Structures are given as structure tokens and as C-alpha cells.
Length: 322
Image (cartoon, one colour):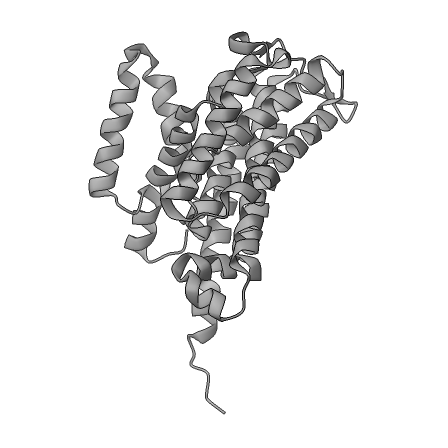
């Protein structure tokens, strides 16, 4: 029997240990945000986009599938949730479930169409489908076109949690983010996630080992789209509106930007990237249209100097798994 070296077990466990420590630190920091005087709307918005970026990272960072249409899941869930709350009069939890179900159904439908192609063809199909939905929502009466659905009631979650209170709403959004984050983390560190990584690295070899790669990619696409819809449903309670902005192709571009700035294929990179982009939009709003130019410049700098992203470079420097 081959002897086991002294550092075998620590080496195997260190990535999980590093990630769990980072998760505890992240959770602790987010829990004390209301006590710091930071504008809660900014942090809640950041949490929604962080979950969205994490869902997108599951698809591209671990499945190797670049989607230019993830905004359609964000916007669809937002519209369905907003309509369910304002017109149907559903409770918040049922409204969220309706929005997530809508995004899940859309991900199944679009996934069956897009997953047949690879590389740039897959990306272009997702972009085309997203733009198709954009024009559908522009003309559909229930979305109110360019005006969007405004004045959405926040209501009582489970009949007793008043979401109209900013602090209460913050912790509800935080709980939703942590739940979605842990679902993604579990998927990444499961046998399913390992197969996804194998497909990303060498799909022909995965096929030769007997894996039905198209089924795995479709499942990853559906899970990613559903969690992106969950982020869209939560965002409705923060912004109290659902608009065409969330379905536009530029939103899909921002999702890609968040993921790349934070660190593609890292667990915490999309979270950092989302907060960086949202902070830029929040605190550079006085520059008007120049915000996009500044974002583009920062993106170019990151690509040239931090090719692994912010978290990716930190993890590489300290040789840690983040």
C-alpha cells in the first residue's frame, strides 16, 4: 500500500477551508452593513447583481459557455414578480416563486435552442433570443412598454415580515443572496460541478468517458438562468419597479463585465466585481454618459494588468482558493 504523505489531507482540504473562511468573513461584513451608515439601497442593489454575476459565472466560469443574453432571465423574473404583486395581489413569497418559475421556464426553452451550438455561435444565439424578448416586452401590454411597471407594493413576507422597513428588507435580500450563493457553491463543488469543469477543459475527452455533455451543459444553463431570475425577483423589492433596462443587451454586457473584473472562474470574484461596477455607477453618476467611458477604461486596465480579475489575482498571489 502506498504511504500517505503528511500534507496529503491538508492539501485536499485547504481550498474548501479557504473558501469557507472567506464566506464567513463576507457574511460577517454584510451583516454589520446597517450599523455602518452605508446607504442600504446601494448594498441591496449590489447584492442582487452579485447573485446575478455568480449565476452567470457558474455558466461561463465552470461550464465554459459564454452567454450574451442573461439579462432576459433577470428582466423576465422581474416583470413576472412585479405583475404578480401589483395586479394579481400575490404575497411577496409567491411573487418571488412566480418570477423564478418564469425564469426557469424561459431557461429551459432557450436552453434547448441555444445549447445545440458552441462557442461564438452559442453566444450569438443567446444574444438574439434576449433581443427578441426585449422587443416582445416593449410591445406587450402587461409590461407597460417604456414606462415599465411602477409602484410595486413590497407587502408582508410570510404574512408578518414587513418589507417596507429598509433594515428588514436588507436582511431579507441578504438572506436571499446567501441562499443563492450557497446553492451555486454546492453545485460547483459537487460531482456535477466536476463534470462541468471537465467539459470546459476538454469536451471531447469528457464525451469519450461516457458523459452526455449536452445534458450537463443544459442543466448548468437552466440552473444559471433560474438563479439569475431569483436575483431579478429580489431586485423588484429593492427598486420597486420593473423596466426594459433589465432586459436590454447592455445589461448582459454589464454582467459579463462584473464577472471578468472580479475574476472569471472564482467563487467570490463575481461578488467583488458586481460591487465595483455598481459603486462606479453610484458614485460617478455626476459624470453622466462619461460613466460608460470610465467603465470601459477601467475594464481595459483590468484586462491588461489583472488578467485573472481582482480576486483571481489575489488568490494567485497568495496561492489560495477564492
